[in-house]
Image 1 (spheres, one colour):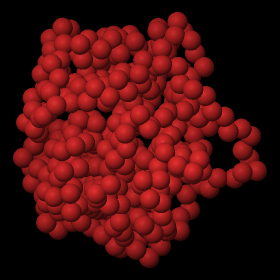
Image 2: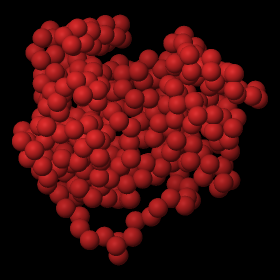
Image 3: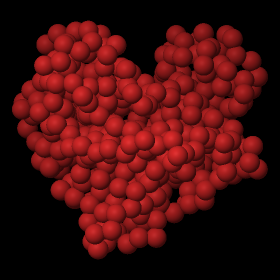
Image 4: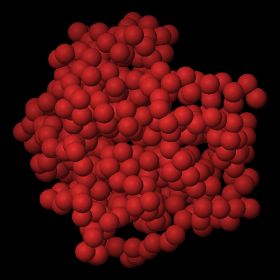
Length: 394
């Protein structure tokens, strides 16, 4: 591995949060409160949201950011009329680009959902900002490009996902050449014990009923299809510079072990903790230090079972597609991600059935002419073309 991507502490820093009203964003603000209560000085410089302005208003009242970005222009105007103080409200893609390039902050927490997180991350890297990344899609569609930019600008990127945080923690003090295998754990989602016939007619409400984690709608549906784990496989490849053939997925329903690393001497390390995103978020913001918190702790006396099982790739076809897609490489992951985002939205709107998600992804991949050399402009064009072709068929 040519670049050490994990080495810089993020305490006593000025922080900007994209997606502050979502699950990760709200948890990040709780983490910042905890850090400040423990003697650190983390300043929230800006927050961004789509249209949840009531949540955003409470965040502004508490943290007093210099800027607020609201994607929905109508909501932005509404917010301007109700917010007081010195916080400036902005909207529009150009304003978002300017915000992430703003000089007076240090760390970008990217908690945006989906492809929308790509361009702000690239702009922030070019502007010399450290990245705490909760957006899988950035590395799924542009892993090689992002890593080149990180190298060129000597910027650090720390993962927030609990699985990738676990891998990072398992690798502390280890040599990358000693890695034999990365094992990502998955809860199995709400349909782990169901048959394919039982799943095919699943409702949106059933798919959103995750047994362990409280997440946004899109990532919860991705968990139900296990595409979420497929995205994490691709993300792990780029984060840890590891061949996808050395990445394995195993279902662990209790979500206590967040991932494993197997080494060349057959030793295995695991990172454990209760399923609470505040723990990996704080680790990302304080790395390589650990800071006291009042977050829930694991009580081994209350643990009854730690069980594991192999994922059924016929039942969870999206995971199978993700493995096939990253092995094929090139621009296929861009198509897969775009098709998945559109298909999930169609499912949430009750326009397709549950397995319609994987069907749409497969059809989009079959139509695509793969390219091994591509630019950011190519990524944007392929993403847009894939979405347009799918939506034109509905």
